[in-house]
Amino acid sequence: MGIIEVQNEIVEEFSLFEDWMQRYEYMIELGKSIELIDPSNKVDSNLIKGCQSKLWLHAELKENKLIFKADSEAIITKGIAAVLLRVFSNQTPKNIIEADLEFIDKIGLKEHLSPTRANGLLSMIKQIKYYALAFNKN
Amino acid sequence: MAFDVNKIREDFPILKRKVNGHPLVYLDNAATSQKPRKVIDSIVDYYENYNSNIHRGVHSISQEATDAYEDARKKIQKHFNVQDSKEIILTSGTTHSINLVANGFTELLNKDDEILISELEHHSNIVPWQMMCEKNGAKIKVIPLTNNGDLNYDSFLNLLSKKTKLVFVNHVSNALGTINPIKSIISKAHKFGAAVLIDGAQASSHIKADLQELNVDFYTTSAHKLCGPTGIGMLFGKKEWLNKMPPYQGGGEMISEVTFEKTTYADLPHKFEAGTPNIVGAIGFGMALDYLNNIGFSNIESYELDLLNYATNKLKEIPGFKIYGEAKNKTSVISFNVGDLHSYDIGTILDKFGIAVRTGQHCAQPVMDYFGISGTVRASFSFYNTKEEIDYFCKSLERAIAMLS
Image (cartoon, rainbow over all chains, first blue to last red; front, side, top):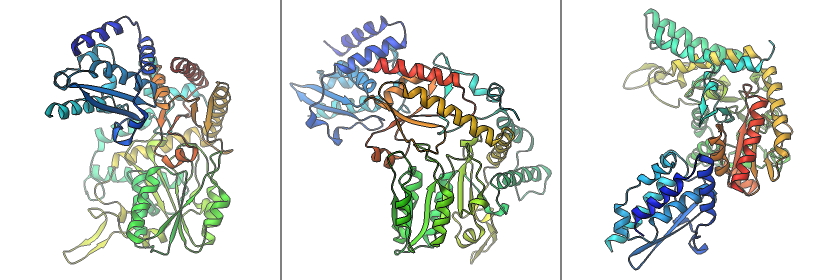
């Protein structure tokens, strides 16, 4: 599935929720089911800065697709990471670079995108885009 | 004056607002306090009616502004029972005050000297001394904590020696709320000839410190912690110390005579107040002290203690609830975790319920390291909080736990 299709799917899922509690409960569920980063990759060089809880992101390229894995001490952060990974993992660097992020607004998580929020979401997106840029050159 | 919390709440415009659709429940008072109408009005009044630069002007409104600024200094002097208003330096806050003293001590200490700092300190209390020690070679010794969040007093006594030149302790810990036994710390340190600097930032909204009775050498606070504006605070220093210390910053106001060959410095307190000061901040600071003194610190103290006990008992009933810092003497601060939930998650959900708490390390990483945790949730109560708010906080916390577990 392409990035736009995945984003639309997520927007549709979130549109079923009536209030923030349901949205958060769903995110927490997603956080619990995230495919975890290999413990050997939970190293400081994979830490995302600007997050109040530790947040690790690891990337590798397989058949010109970037595979991201993540983990966090905080379950909400992990849930947000799970949503991002669903969108960006297993996509080509080129598609990741070109992807827009409107869906975050549509699923009511825009507040988490503010650079002053201490959750690292914005830094995580930046890091995902950096990886895509780096691997795109190769 | 009888203490009526509902009447007091009327004084704070912000308490009427809603956050995320819920009435604001502000439990982040240890980070900063809310401002009463009187303080806000004093700020507006200054800008609307007598905004002017101070000390140099011959015109009327400059004189009015100068009087208001110096009047604020006198209010601070009176509040802290300081002998001479020249011993009150108006700074931008506690961090500025501590840097000012650390800078002054750079030349007064050498590599054979030691300074004692408690493990309970805020980062802003550690870094300036590390910077000082890099310059003069003095050593930092750390007074350790005990499990309940008290300072280890016996270790403090053991660390004291003829080499100790300065002892630096907070009056109240920002992370745990522990009230330190500063009176005995000061008198013991003085026996060895060491000066004592007390950081009163977390204490000043709860405890009225009598600086002459304490016989402390330096004491500092920030106005924003005690219902005053941000960006203003004070450093009290005994005259004999302040006279020994070189000026911290060069600029206007702090000079007596300037030629290109030599500058002579102004007398205290202006020697340490370079440039145009935070005039409106000082005025707001003075008004905040008036406001608090009008309510009465004994009223504030007993009401907040009642809130603390009520909240502590109620919260302890929650399964998995663990408090960090249960010193016998503490202010209305509860630092906690629940099971293995992350403080960030709890804080995020509480915010959705309109409740403001602080999460993380509280700028006190050594304290967190001591307990082997990455952070806590900190709820801190003020005299304008109510038991109903605490009930709502407990109920919301339980809902957050259910969501996150």
